[in-house]
View (spheres, rainbow, N blue to C red):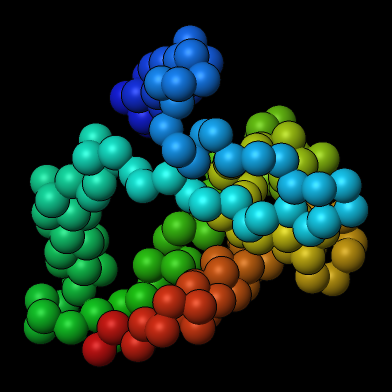
Length: 162
C-alpha cells in the first residue's frame, strides 16, 4: 500500500509540473461545453507494483490448509459439519471472553460497540443481541458467526467445504 501511494504520488506530482506541450494528449482534452454531459472518467492502468504477488497467494493457500488441518479433528481429511460447529463454538467462547472487558461474564452492547474490529467479525452489532435483553451471550455470538459464514458462502459461491 505504501509503494502504491509513493508511485501514485510521484506520477501525479510529475503531471503538475509538465508544460502544456509536454502533457499527454489525454491531458490536453478540451473542457466540455456548458451543459454538456461530462465524459466518463477513464481509469489508469495499475502499475506493475500493484499486481497480485504470487507469494501472497501461496501464503494464503498454506494458511488455509493449516486451518483446515486444525479443524479436521478426526484427521480424515474432511472438515465435517460437526467439526465446523465445534470450531464455531470455540471461537464464540474466545470472542465472548475478549469482548467482556469488565470481566463480569456478560457482554453488553456498550462493550460490543467499543470492541471495534473484533465486533466487526460478528456483523451488525445491533443484531448480535438477538433477544434484545442487553446481554450478548456466547450462543448469540456463535449465531452471529454462523450467519457471517453463511453470508460469505453465499457471496463467494463457495460450497460447504466437504
